[in-house]
Image 1 (cartoon, rainbow, N blue to C red):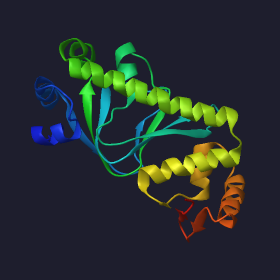
Image 2: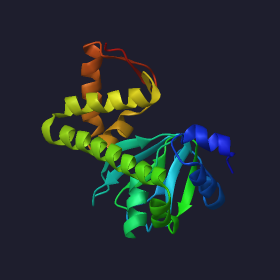
Image 3: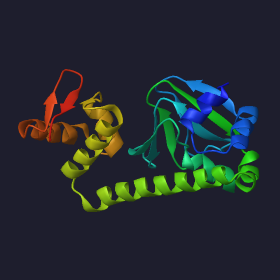
Image 4: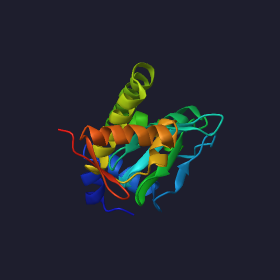
Length: 210
């Protein structure tokens, strides 16, 4: 389990008693990159708080098509698990470890209890909902009002903000996240390269647009 000082450095805005409650009741878990952490329709038994690494959340349609939603980083919680815990619902998204990760799993029975007992937990949950709601609004805006080349640019910028200027994703992986074809992605990346927005490497590309 984490030391209290480590927990405070990752989640700095909690009350002292909440740190103690987390250390007493949460389980620290590890998962390798590529591990599916949450499936569509899965019953949720614990909330997930990221301690180290990056988690990707995405949705899947009835035909198996995927669409990238957002990343979770250290110090952030999966809002879906908080909502599912609170309402005893099933997951409507998938979550996958992008890197090797560590996360805290908090049993369902503490959700209501801590909302009433700790103001800092209440505010943390509200901030998590608000942050993810804003992320989803941005995603909806891109889908509804932008064409595919604008959506691809938005997607790449999110990857750059998350992982740095070198994007280590295949054309097929990008196509999966945008729910489009690999051919469309390849064509648009070539257009970006021609416009000197990106520099293609063998298994990656660099974002060089100012």
